[in-house]
Amino acid sequence: MKSLINNVTNCLLCCFFLSLTTGCRQNTDSEYNLNFEFINNGMPSGWQILYEPISSVSLDSIIVKSGKYSISIENEEDCDFFQMACFVFPRYTGKNITVSGYVKTEDVRDGWAGLVTEIHPFANNVRQKVQITGTTGWKKYEITIDEITQQTHQLIIGVVLTGKGKMWMDDIKVTVDGKNIGKVKPYKPVSFSEKAENDNEFNNGSFIVFPELTAQKIKNLELLGRIWGLLKYHHPAISRGNYNLDFELFRILPDYLNITDSRQRDEFLIAWLNKFGRIPNCKTCKPTNDNAFLKPDLAWIDNSNVSLNLRNLLHKIYLNRSQGAHYYFDTSTGPGNPNFTNEKAYANIYYPDDGYRLLALYRFWNMIHYFFPYKHLTDKDWNSVLKEYIPTFIKAKTRYEYEL
Image (cartoon, rainbow, N blue to C red):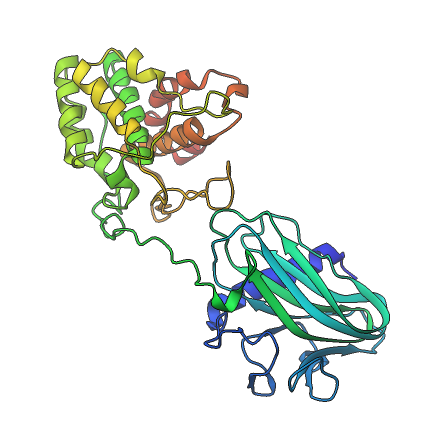
């Protein structure tokens, strides 16, 4: 038999993806059919039955804890056996979730019967607090998960039998922060603007060809890459999905590459930043705690030899940075574990052109700069990497050179 952890994990994963395709992860009844009273084609409505034989799972109208039905799983065959009935809940906001249920067993051997839980996207270990063997009467079991992030993803509960024997489960209850889940409103995702998603102008290429890269042009491109990253992760209008910042970069690059002096460059960048609209004063933005391990490194703003007006504008963006949900990244899975959402892969572009190669460098450098907690352990000072690799990325002659 496969390891128990792998079996449980695979079942829960399968249950999650089935819920996406079947659309049956929610019921209209307030109890989510946790007492198995709602029937569809002879099986409890809303529940997924995983693995063969499906006939090993049935509803029992004789042996029940309460109501008309309990759910039962049975096996007496001499074979590796693992069966689960699972239910997937929508997303909730809370500090802890408690799952309880009554279990009865009959001669469970060579395995166990029980209740398992998991929270998508499976950042935590599989919870398997309930493992029962032998013959037992109806008994209540309970699992509490108190490692919930601010916005929990789908909760999956599973009724499991491994090995031989028979089990029954009835009267499952789920609470969020002590409140019955049937009375808790599912989390409503933030609705982002569709403007960034619908911007498809450069889907097939940036069509940008770089001129000879002088020392001044490389310096200007380094500054642009830093400003691009500051905008992407902090500007309120961009956080709402109002702009596709990849393509905004391509729109200004041709003119930016023709700039010949610092004054012209700074005026150009100020005009570009103002394009994204007025920056409202942020009343909830606070300075980073002195004891924070990962602090934003913004020293480059004052060390870049830019005009006072540009410097003040860059500081203003950070001091009034976006709060809460963000179009380009999501940290709801836990602190320090950003999920970079809405990053288009542009998989149809076999060998990225000059603009796309620069974009790849800007993306990667800024992700590390703002989110990687071990940046201080890299072989090189991360602040020097962007400038060094601009000509390397631009001069890559083949896809192989670019990938290296």
